Image (cartoon, rainbow, N blue to C red; front, side, top):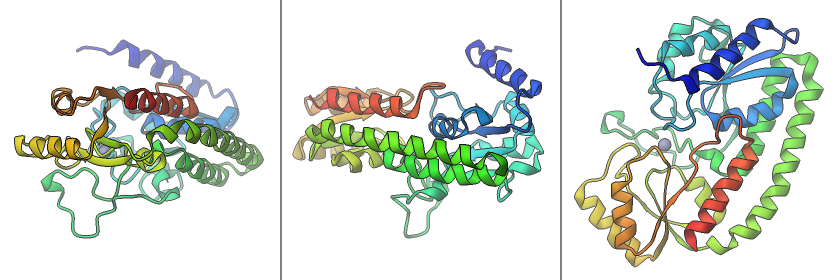
Length: 302
Ligand SMILES: [Zn+2]
């Protein structure tokens, strides 16, 4: 059996921290994905411990539910999910196996961060998952807009308060500090993002819509014919025609998607491919991640 050392060692280190219980009754939080984790870490500060399940270099829709992920879940006070069925392909198996009543769906320790934001792309008609659409309840990539990070931080603070009322002031102060810092950064980012206004965007997956709306990019199309569905040759022909007609300037993709089709489309439209960071790196502050995304787009559009 192969062991991924880069993943196994930090997890083991964190688990030994948990079992040592350094601060009495400090909240033990498990987050599914590194973007919600990066915000929760800011709100928790020293008043809790956090473990992220998914490797941030992999597509968060498709995570291997390794048995080693059961141990942190079995001991958690709360589970923080992105929601909108982002994790539906892998989390239910783990939740069942963890046998932890605190964190089951609807329990006091089950925190769905999508409940704090207003999702886009919510289907109005019936959705058939057998057709492969992996965004059946709306677009789950909402943390690419930092306005949503502020809403999530404030929502998390109140959920942490309900789990640990004695630390209420600390949770609320950290969320307020985070909101203030992000709002200041938003002004500076928007000044720089002005160069993107009205430019056409082609993305591999429907994962950059919230960013595109914030940056006032024109979302021309997607390489995938539906979220999670690779393109047909006919779809590629249509996408390239659209890209040319609407002068698409940025062809953006995350590292976990195949590269051949987006490279082909970009080349046909005379543009380079822009690699956009899909998630914060492990323990990377949320603001640093958005800075990386903003910088990648500005470079890609030049
Ligand atoms: Zn998606």
